[in-house]
Amino acid sequence: MKLSESVKSISYLKANAAQLIEDANKNQKTFVITQNGEAKVIVQDIKAYEKTQETLALLKILSMSSENIENSKAKGIKETFSDIRKELKIHK
Image (cartoon, rainbow, N blue to C red; front, side):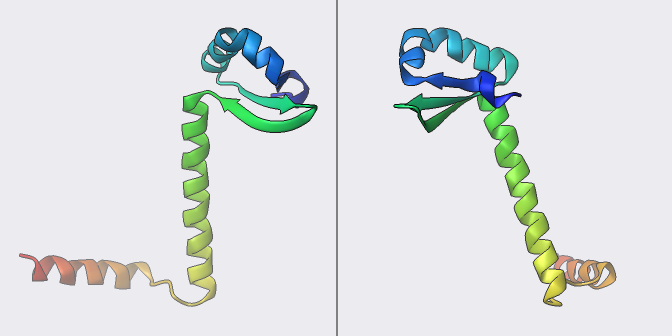
């Protein structure tokens, strides 16, 4: 997506809201809305937004995992499964 094609003024949004929303939904586009020449808000297709949020969540998990490994807080797979087996036996 080219940023130059997705920048719209607030007056454009007011005059063409239905068309802009349809375009955002149909093509999973994101629009930058400007006010007085300054970027103020984003109008985005809900599916594209959900994808972005899922991606951010996965990146956060990856970052946390990397930090745990660096800080020696991560367990090996054998120890992890051993702990799970112990927990399962306790809850039977």
